[in-house]
Length: 222
Length: 247
Image (cartoon, rainbow over all chains, first blue to last red; front, top):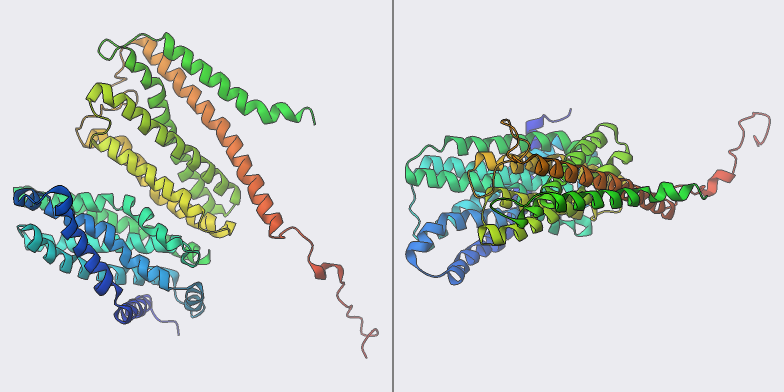
């Protein structure tokens, strides 16, 4: 009997997270790399406390966009064609594979956001406001970036070293997420409505999810 | 054989005539009341930006065409159009910067139209880079077609950026609901001729670049031995006549 779509997604998520627990590259490489970037930025733009407090949220989201993609690149580079073929022969639905890879990437990105976000708050003295909306923003960005990065990883041929291309494909397409996240924080700070930015991010998440699921099979066949 | 030469050269003749017509009308059109002679950059900058939209729009249509039909001819059209689009987007950006320096006082400003155009440029640079990651034509076509569809979201973003965000770059000059913003009829005609000329250049380049892709694909297929007879083809399978060879 073929397992249901959700149990296939669950199996892929479990596999990816277990693999990540063994390798530990998000915890020991990507997160420290993000923290180092946050430490270096004041050396480049100046150490004025007021300036850093103002640009801090933007710098945090930028590190999420640029270094968060590495979470998925790392995963794509360790998965060989033989492993993908084996999963396919076992009857894994390509759409479930894509959804599972996106979900595991989003979970790892969320961990990245929380830890690096806490570091940013301490280093840049960022004011934490509107915690429920902030939490929604973190989840939407993690989901959107996870979906985009999983799609980018499906597009490149990691066996020929193409995984280095994933950040170039994903970073320009993640602009609406960057805009939504930074403008939502700005809106919270100024006390204005942030609904349109939330809707923008939700629309990105939904549309990338639809494209990713529809194109999962042709991409797997290639 | 002789009759083949003009058919191979007509794109170059078309490009020559189009460029000559474009330069002539740009030079004959009047100077702007505010910008003076600088306005002539418009006759190259606006058509280059138009070609960027056109080229990436064709890439989108051809990518959808490929995904629906799996015909590699669509993939060649998408790739050719993206190559030309990247070139003309780069040209539009550089010309815009040259125009911006004397009019705005800076080479670059964080204007929504400029920034999104630069992002669109890099999306399609990524598209071209993606095509280089594999030699398998079918895999390349599948992957590029998906990015060709996803990347097209940038086109309306760039076009409507001047409407959604009120920044330094002026709103659309021609394609606007309340009629063209350019009042002078000679300027309008000159810009129209420049746009037509650039479109002719695009079509001519498409013919050449798509042909180049076709020849390249054929050479790749020949190298891979796709059209060579297999060794076993010369051996006839034994007959199933029950009276023969049934030892």
